[in-house]
Image 1 (cartoon, rainbow, N blue to C red):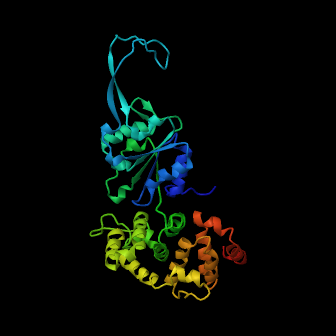
Image 2 (image 1 turned 180 degrees about the vertical axis):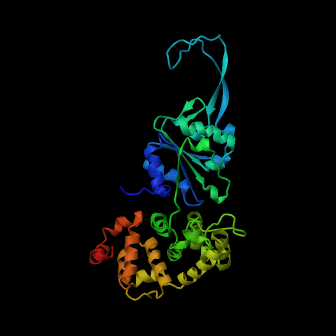
Image 3 (image 1 turned 60 degrees about the vertical axis):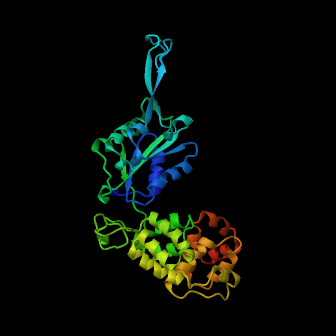
Length: 374
């Protein structure tokens, strides 16, 4: 029997898969570093389960009155019990109080719901107590979620020192699992390329993979890119979330100007990362334009150093289209095999590019001739 490694983390995709499989019976709490994409799990689940209605709940904003509000109704003395069918004997005209659940939980739509309790560990204690019933029984007051509904939660690591805490009796009502921080390759292949993020940012992450290292890895104690809880003077840091913001800033650098771009980068990913990315941008701005490559693939200038080649390849991954793929493949054929392989593997990660690449004659001929690279 193989050894079982208890306590290991799961990926974001594995977390979503687990919630989809057992979330209707077991509330799963995913805890992980800030900015790794935990909140996006609801969108993933909504795509996986189109017959469910997603309901996003930010627990940091909840107060007790946000769950349900009271209303008074006239009790019908001729009413019958829903459970036994027996007539309920009550004084005529007796008024009772019921509670109407908040519409944000989507109970009124009559469909199974996917309730995401985001930032659960930061909720007020009184709010957590109310949420315990929702997590364990799928119930808000007297109202149950529709059959087949799912409840799951996310929270940050307690060691990050950002105020997340779950009492033992709360944790006992759920299955808690750690969501691992995606490494550089996972982020590039599973997120950056499919979402067409800026090629220079993608290349930078490939060249500096330790920018996405975990803070609790002992070997990363001197890593200036990542968040270190308690480190004095640290402000911004690199996370998958800040890299997405960085992509937006970098793509607009020509309009923003060099000074403003660098200032925004420093305030988004930290000064150390911003300085290193500035060097990347200097290289990227000296590369031949995409228009020059496509108009004259046989004579357009080839990049000479590793950084430039990396940027060029990922730029092609994000920019190539059906009508430019033949020209790019001609240009790519002038580059070393390792860069050709990087393009081939990366472009097949893009859901919008893959479809026309597999039907393109130039790409198929290249793939058959270089199948040993895969």
